[in-house]
Image (tube, rainbow, N blue to C red; front, side):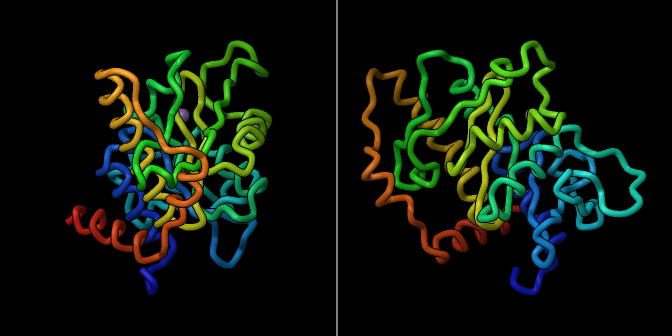
Length: 232
Ligand code: MN
C-alpha cells in the first residue's frame, strides 16, 4: 500500500468494507488528501463494492468537487467535509447502515458496548446523534451543511457516532485503522446481540477499553492484508 495512489487505496477500502458487510449498495468511505489537508477523496455515487480507482473524485471541505464534475455524487457527502473540518486528526471516514449496528440505533434500552479485545477499537461511551432533535421531521438523510456540522459536533473526539434510526459514522487516522474499527465494531455489535439472547452480558470496563484499544500498526496491517486478499 506504500506505493499505492490514494485513489487505489480508497477503492480497495470501498471493496473491503462491502465484502466484510459494513457497506452494501449504500454507505461510503473517504480519505483525506495526503498533500492537501483541505481536500479529500470519495467515490462518485456508486455501490462501494463496484468502486474502481477512476471512480474517485476530489472534494474540498465544503464537500464540493474540485474542478469540473459531471457524474452523480453521494447526497450525504457533506458528512465527510464537516468531519475533516472539525477533526484535523481524522484522515479517513466511513458512513454506513450496517445491519449489525442498526438495532443499537433503534432500541431505546440497547447500548453498543465493547465485548471483545478487538472491539475496544470503538472506545468508550459511543455518542448517539438524533437528527430529529435539532432538525425536526427530515427524510433521515444528512444532506445539509448544518446537519453535517451537528453530526460532527456530536462525534466530538470519539471514534464513532451512532445515528438514531439511520446508521453510524466511523473515523480513523488512516484507511487501515478505519477498516479495522468499522469491521470490528460491527462484529462486537453482532456478538453482543447474540449473547443478550442468553441473558445479561459482561462487558469491558472503561479502563479495560483504554488498555485494549491501542492497536499497533502490525495488527492493523495484518487484518488489512487478510481482508484485501479476500477481494481476489
Ligand atoms: Mn446514510
